[in-house]
Picture 1 (cartoon, rainbow, N blue to C red):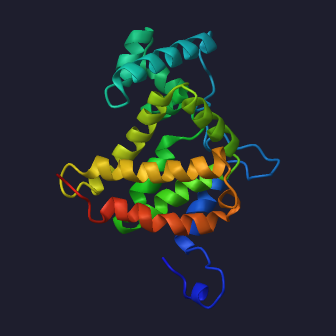
Picture 2 (cartoon, rainbow, N blue to C red):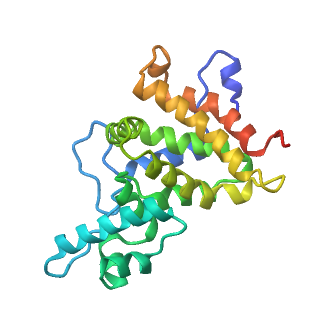
Picture 3 (cartoon, rainbow, N blue to C red):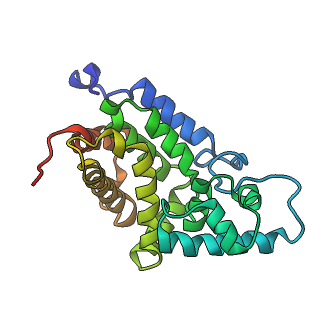
Length: 243
């Protein structure tokens, strides 16, 4: 992941795949500092579809309340669209109508302004040997984009006792689908590897965006990504101590 130019005293240019990934994540929403609103299919967790049924706002609110209760009680993997629909006394098609997939409903329930399926797709497409760089690029780019203030508010609320369990369930659901099965070597270590990586990323987010430690908080995004990516990759595919 190094760049020969860096050794000659020139700043390392971002790898082209990483540049394309960051560009793709940002161009789907409003550009930082820009005056253009995000398109409807960008990072919004609610699918905007025409022709909603009458009384839709009440139905949507009931579905969302039910989903929050069930996700908190059963976790993401233990909750189904049909189960939510049954408890909310609506047709499952209405749940899909208002929220799209279960992952999108989960993101709406946690109030995270990111479509988790986009994250899962990006991580799933990355070669295993580049997972560390991809995770760093995807996560840190979002926090340095126009989504940053909202994500910061969510993390502050979770730290203050708002909904840490739901945030944890969101992270676990995304990581379990996209990463864990590919790094489960030796068998049974995948989730531990992923959680080590999560602690590294959360530490960076805390120092950079919550505590705003200087000069770390002011470092260029690319420098932070290139520095932590090897550590994340070691957690994913390097040696790990087992009992």
